[in-house]
Length: 183
Image 1 (cartoon, rainbow, N blue to C red):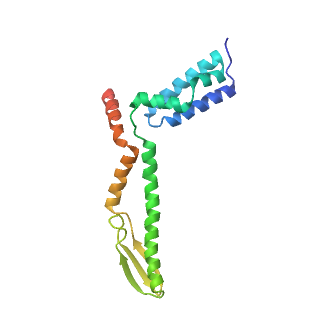
Image 2 (spheres, one colour; image 1 turned 90 degrees about the horizontal axis):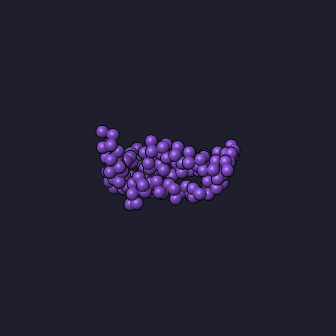
Image 3 (cartoon, rainbow, N blue to C red; image 1 turned 90 degrees about the vertical axis):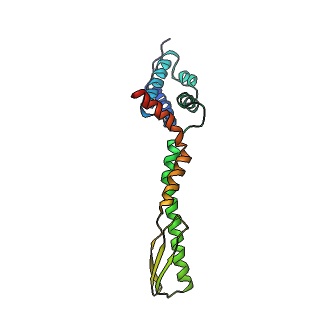
């Protein structure tokens, strides 16, 4: 028996297709597009044959299907994650900047607490190896501070940690296979 696919049924199918796509972000863009098209066509054909509800039920969960696609592409071992690496890469400098600024503010506040009407220039080495020297200048208890920026060691540790968090070294074999297939 041939079923008609309503606009509401199409919306349900699209929701499942795009939910699956969101779970496949570790796949190359072209592969994700092909997967979306394939799943959409199969669901529409299934909806015409058995109805939209039954076709979606037969598909199962999008998480399980995404894991199967990812396992087929990368194997069952732990995979790289561009999302985890990107989130770590963006979040760490924000948190570190806040932490380093609080440390420099604490240094300046400590000077004011010790001598409220101080005048002069004071230096602090910063957080060892990660932050540059902080220089606080005061005139009659009012002051500003400069410095406290990231050191080259911080940048190196940040990049290495991003690679480790995202397990990006695991992307190299897939990248080499794709490149060998294209060349």
